[in-house]
Length: 192
Image (cartoon, rainbow, N blue to C red; front, side, top):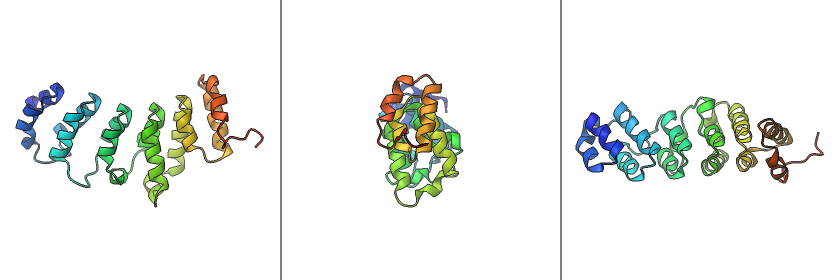
Protein backbone atom coordinates (compact mmCIF):
# COMPACT_ATOMS: atom_id res chain seq x y z
CA UNK A 1 0.00 0.00 0.00
CA UNK A 2 2.94 2.35 0.68
CA UNK A 3 4.05 2.12 -2.96
CA UNK A 4 0.50 2.89 -4.12
CA UNK A 5 0.20 5.95 -1.86
CA UNK A 6 3.71 7.08 -2.81
CA UNK A 7 2.76 6.85 -6.47
CA UNK A 8 -0.34 8.96 -5.86
CA UNK A 9 1.70 11.57 -3.98
CA UNK A 10 4.27 11.75 -6.78
CA UNK A 11 1.62 11.83 -9.48
CA UNK A 12 3.06 8.60 -10.92
CA UNK A 13 0.14 6.97 -12.71
CA UNK A 14 2.33 4.11 -13.96
CA UNK A 15 3.24 3.16 -10.38
CA UNK A 16 -0.36 3.56 -9.19
CA UNK A 17 -1.58 1.31 -12.01
CA UNK A 18 0.65 -1.50 -10.69
CA UNK A 19 -1.19 -1.43 -7.37
CA UNK A 20 -4.72 -0.39 -8.29
CA UNK A 21 -5.91 -4.01 -8.34
CA UNK A 22 -5.03 -4.36 -4.65
CA UNK A 23 -7.91 -2.05 -3.83
CA UNK A 24 -10.29 -4.90 -4.62
CA UNK A 25 -12.37 -2.63 -6.84
CA UNK A 26 -13.77 -1.09 -3.66
CA UNK A 27 -14.26 2.69 -3.74
CA UNK A 28 -14.66 2.65 0.05
CA UNK A 29 -11.24 1.22 0.79
CA UNK A 30 -9.16 3.59 2.93
CA UNK A 31 -6.35 3.61 0.37
CA UNK A 32 -8.66 4.65 -2.43
CA UNK A 33 -10.43 7.31 -0.37
CA UNK A 34 -7.06 8.74 0.70
CA UNK A 35 -5.78 8.61 -2.89
CA UNK A 36 -8.80 10.44 -4.31
CA UNK A 37 -8.62 13.09 -1.59
CA UNK A 38 -4.88 13.51 -2.09
CA UNK A 39 -5.31 13.96 -5.85
CA UNK A 40 -8.03 16.54 -5.20
CA UNK A 41 -5.89 18.40 -2.64
CA UNK A 42 -2.88 18.38 -4.98
CA UNK A 43 -5.13 19.53 -7.84
CA UNK A 44 -3.76 16.60 -9.85
CA UNK A 45 -6.42 16.24 -12.52
CA UNK A 46 -4.73 13.36 -14.34
CA UNK A 47 -4.39 11.28 -11.15
CA UNK A 48 -7.89 12.17 -10.02
CA UNK A 49 -9.43 11.05 -13.31
CA UNK A 50 -7.30 7.90 -13.41
CA UNK A 51 -8.40 6.90 -9.91
CA UNK A 52 -12.01 7.85 -10.54
CA UNK A 53 -12.17 5.78 -13.72
CA UNK A 54 -10.24 2.85 -12.26
CA UNK A 55 -12.28 2.07 -9.19
CA UNK A 56 -15.53 3.97 -8.85
CA UNK A 57 -18.63 2.68 -10.56
CA UNK A 58 -21.52 4.45 -12.23
CA UNK A 59 -23.89 5.70 -9.56
CA UNK A 60 -21.33 5.34 -6.76
CA UNK A 61 -21.88 7.91 -4.02
CA UNK A 62 -18.78 9.29 -2.33
CA UNK A 63 -18.69 10.13 1.36
CA UNK A 64 -19.36 13.72 2.55
CA UNK A 65 -15.71 14.38 3.42
CA UNK A 66 -14.47 13.45 -0.06
CA UNK A 67 -17.14 15.60 -1.70
CA UNK A 68 -16.25 18.36 0.75
CA UNK A 69 -12.57 18.20 -0.20
CA UNK A 70 -13.57 18.83 -3.82
CA UNK A 71 -15.66 21.84 -2.80
CA UNK A 72 -12.85 23.33 -0.70
CA UNK A 73 -10.25 22.64 -3.40
CA UNK A 74 -12.05 25.09 -5.65
CA UNK A 75 -11.93 22.96 -8.79
CA UNK A 76 -15.55 22.61 -9.91
CA UNK A 77 -14.56 19.82 -12.30
CA UNK A 78 -13.54 17.58 -9.41
CA UNK A 79 -16.78 18.29 -7.59
CA UNK A 80 -18.97 17.64 -10.63
CA UNK A 81 -17.10 14.42 -11.39
CA UNK A 82 -17.70 13.16 -7.85
CA UNK A 83 -21.40 13.99 -7.71
CA UNK A 84 -22.21 13.08 -11.31
CA UNK A 85 -23.95 15.03 -14.02
CA UNK A 86 -27.39 14.66 -12.50
CA UNK A 87 -26.22 15.13 -8.90
CA UNK A 88 -26.72 11.50 -7.90
CA UNK A 89 -23.77 11.84 -5.51
CA UNK A 90 -25.67 14.47 -3.55
CA UNK A 91 -28.44 12.10 -2.60
CA UNK A 92 -27.02 11.32 0.80
CA UNK A 93 -27.50 12.85 4.21
CA UNK A 94 -24.89 15.48 4.94
CA UNK A 95 -24.44 17.00 8.39
CA UNK A 96 -25.44 20.67 7.93
CA UNK A 97 -21.90 21.96 8.50
CA UNK A 98 -20.54 19.51 5.90
CA UNK A 99 -23.22 20.11 3.30
CA UNK A 100 -21.54 21.09 0.02
CA UNK A 101 -23.66 24.25 -0.20
CA UNK A 102 -22.46 25.39 3.22
CA UNK A 103 -18.86 24.55 2.38
CA UNK A 104 -19.04 26.31 -1.00
CA UNK A 105 -20.47 29.40 0.69
CA UNK A 106 -17.78 29.34 3.37
CA UNK A 107 -14.84 29.14 0.93
CA UNK A 108 -16.42 31.32 -1.77
CA UNK A 109 -16.74 28.63 -4.44
CA UNK A 110 -19.44 30.34 -6.50
CA UNK A 111 -19.43 27.80 -9.35
CA UNK A 112 -20.23 24.95 -6.97
CA UNK A 113 -22.74 27.06 -5.03
CA UNK A 114 -24.56 27.96 -8.27
CA UNK A 115 -24.53 24.32 -9.40
CA UNK A 116 -26.05 23.29 -6.06
CA UNK A 117 -28.69 26.03 -5.98
CA UNK A 118 -29.75 25.11 -9.52
CA UNK A 119 -29.75 21.39 -8.66
CA UNK A 120 -31.80 21.95 -5.50
CA UNK A 121 -34.36 24.07 -7.32
CA UNK A 122 -34.64 21.56 -10.16
CA UNK A 123 -37.04 18.72 -9.58
CA UNK A 124 -37.67 17.52 -6.06
CA UNK A 125 -34.12 17.76 -4.77
CA UNK A 126 -34.85 19.80 -1.63
CA UNK A 127 -35.53 16.52 0.14
CA UNK A 128 -31.77 15.83 -0.03
CA UNK A 129 -30.97 18.95 1.98
CA UNK A 130 -31.92 17.32 5.26
CA UNK A 131 -32.96 20.26 7.39
CA UNK A 132 -33.30 22.61 4.40
CA UNK A 133 -33.83 25.75 6.47
CA UNK A 134 -30.79 25.06 8.64
CA UNK A 135 -28.58 24.31 5.61
CA UNK A 136 -29.73 27.41 3.74
CA UNK A 137 -29.38 29.70 6.77
CA UNK A 138 -25.94 28.32 7.56
CA UNK A 139 -24.82 28.70 3.94
CA UNK A 140 -26.09 32.27 3.86
CA UNK A 141 -24.29 33.05 7.11
CA UNK A 142 -21.02 31.50 5.85
CA UNK A 143 -21.20 33.42 2.57
CA UNK A 144 -21.78 36.71 4.39
CA UNK A 145 -19.07 36.05 6.99
CA UNK A 146 -16.58 35.46 4.21
CA UNK A 147 -17.75 38.49 2.25
CA UNK A 148 -18.88 36.29 -0.65
CA UNK A 149 -21.78 38.48 -1.74
CA UNK A 150 -22.24 36.79 -5.12
CA UNK A 151 -23.07 33.58 -3.25
CA UNK A 152 -25.27 35.41 -0.75
CA UNK A 153 -27.17 36.87 -3.72
CA UNK A 154 -27.81 33.34 -5.00
CA UNK A 155 -29.28 32.30 -1.67
CA UNK A 156 -31.47 35.17 -0.51
CA UNK A 157 -35.17 34.81 -1.14
CA UNK A 158 -36.68 37.40 1.19
CA UNK A 159 -35.94 40.55 3.18
CA UNK A 160 -35.18 38.63 6.35
CA UNK A 161 -32.30 36.93 4.56
CA UNK A 162 -31.12 40.23 3.12
CA UNK A 163 -31.04 41.83 6.56
CA UNK A 164 -29.17 38.83 7.99
CA UNK A 165 -26.54 39.15 5.26
CA UNK A 166 -26.07 42.86 5.92
CA UNK A 167 -25.65 42.25 9.65
CA UNK A 168 -23.10 39.48 8.99
CA UNK A 169 -21.19 41.61 6.46
CA UNK A 170 -20.89 44.49 8.91
CA UNK A 171 -20.15 42.28 11.92
CA UNK A 172 -17.36 40.49 10.04
CA UNK A 173 -15.65 43.61 8.73
CA UNK A 174 -17.01 43.63 5.18
CA UNK A 175 -18.58 47.09 5.40
CA UNK A 176 -17.16 47.89 1.96
CA UNK A 177 -19.32 45.15 0.45
CA UNK A 178 -22.64 46.27 1.95
CA UNK A 179 -23.33 48.77 -0.86
CA UNK A 180 -22.55 46.16 -3.53
CA UNK A 181 -24.87 43.71 -1.82
CA UNK A 182 -27.58 46.34 -1.38
CA UNK A 183 -27.56 46.94 -5.15
CA UNK A 184 -29.24 43.54 -5.53
CA UNK A 185 -32.85 44.00 -6.57
CA UNK A 186 -33.92 41.51 -3.86
CA UNK A 187 -32.74 43.94 -1.17
CA UNK A 188 -35.23 46.59 -0.09
CA UNK A 189 -34.19 48.85 2.78
CA UNK A 190 -37.69 50.24 3.06
CA UNK A 191 -39.01 46.80 4.08
CA UNK A 192 -39.07 46.45 7.88
